[in-house]
Amino acid sequence: MSAKTPLTGLVAATHTPFHADGSLNLSVVEKQASQLLIDGVSYAFIGGTTGESSSLTLVERRLLCAQWMEVVKGSALKVIVHVGANCLADAAALASQAEDLGAAAISALSPSYFKPRNVAALVESMAEIASAAPDLPFYYYEIPTMTGLSVAPSEFLAQAASRIPNLAGIKFTSSNLMEYQLCTAVNEGAFDIPFGFDEMLLAALAFGAKGAVGSTYNFAAPIYLRIMAAFERGDFAAARREQLRTVRFIQRLASVGYMGAAKAVMAMRGVEVGPPRLPNTALSAAEIDSLRVDLESMGFFDWIKPDASA
Image (cartoon, rainbow, N blue to C red; front, top):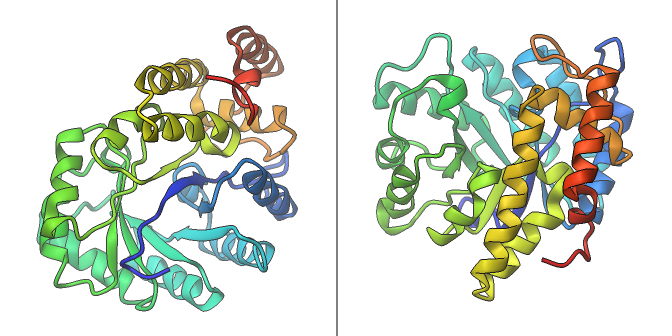
């Protein structure tokens, strides 16, 4: 893909699989990729927030990227590699590797310990990363709930347009829909702004989103595909009904710690991605049992069937 080719459909922000002892379990990647294709997902976004990138060493992130790129060879699944890090040199090294291995695109969140103090500093930080993979589309990763950054992403786009030649757009993981609209309007809509809040996808579609990046697409993609299909045919009652389902199951996952709960749901779907790493925590056996009962009660396992009706 080129910097001018927008992401469309669902992009699953994948989990990094671990053994019970917390070490990488890269043998699971093949099953993760296979399940995404079965569920109708076109892209995997690896090593991001869902992938617990800040809890991985640089060596582990390189191994994860290499494994994904090996697994998807010859398949329809494309890989976007998140390369952001507090150390810009590490981020640039990951970007270079992603380009060498044939990734479809790269993305990077801002350094968040020492934060860029203004738009110009953010632009220069992202330019350093993007320039390490000049032939790949680059997406700035806006996720203020995690980075604590208050720089307006629309201002970033406006200033970065002439500084970062391979800038494709923004992975927009924010509930600020006013700012989302401003981003889509920069340079008369020149940039791709895939949306990153699963439980608000319908709102983003109304504002022109064509692609979405999310963690629940790993195990609940059919629901979101129905939301998009209902929106396209103008059936907003069905789209709202499906979206409310996602709000309900995400609320339940978050009630016991989202990362551990999401990984537990992956196991319920037959893809054993293991526990999260500290500081995220795994669910106890009792919590998993209770979660399964509640998900069954609300109809979740029927909702995620590809042929489920709205």
